[in-house]
Amino acid sequence: MKLTFYLRKTLSVLAVFFVLAIGHNQLCFGQSLIQKAKKSFDSLNNKYYSRRLSEEEYLDEADKLRDHYLLTKGVHFTTQQLTELLSLYKKIGWSNKKYDGVRKNYYLAFLNNAAMFEQNGTYMYYADKIAQEYKKNGEQNPFIVISAKSKFYMEQGLHNKVIALYVQQKTYVKTLPELLKKNKIDVPTGIDALTFLSAGVVESYIKTNDSLAVYETSELIYEIGKEIRKRSQDNKQYMLYNEFFMLVTHHFVALFEKDNIKVKNILDGFTELKTTYKDIETEL
Image (cartoon, rainbow, N blue to C red; front, side, top):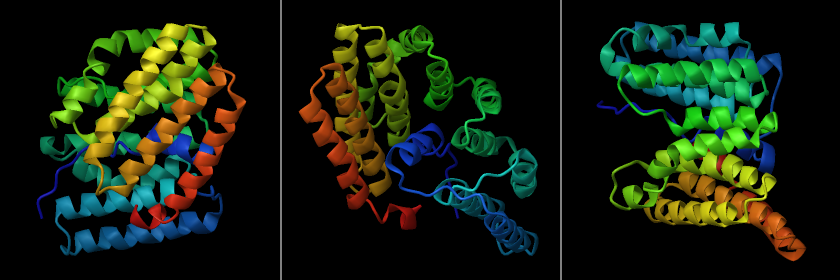
């Protein structure tokens, strides 16, 4: 089976914001789920060792299994536990240059784990690891890394640093609607950009009282969202995340305008969104 490996960009910061803001998944801390995860990976590893799975098939199944426990179930692993679960995944990922996406996914798992439970130092460490993997291939820093830095700055109240990050990327970011329209970038890249813009840049401009930038950035978000919507009609996950960040942006703008009626309607929209996509967990 031929598979294309890429960062599962609908995870990480995006999943964290969604879990915290909408409460779609309940975070679980029990040892029982950790044991289930270990048994699941042991079973998967045995299939690979018995040659019932190719390397590509194993890696794809491991991605799904990891995401199921880490994001859908919200299990909090220690670094050692996650390292053990992903030991075979790492071994295969580092065995061949063609698996560069696997190496990024490996570090992404640790970044997700740290982000979900606000381990900021660890979070930044693995964001840097992902950036290094991109640099090795001569690729541009992914928005997931930029979002990681933005999240850290936001928690420290360093809004000017978030804005500085955006200014560095602004020329490229403004081309995203057209790039999405012409299928020159994938939808997850657009969604990662929304994570950075909606969950960081807009609020930072609000905090610094830059009205022009608030509306300019919001319009850019809506343009990106419009193109994502066109390309995501057959993908409920992408539709969910896109609609979520449209609501987040509208919410920030309504707060900025002190429009309490609009704020209430938008909050109702979050509830409706949760109901509309209540079955999304079964599709992860």
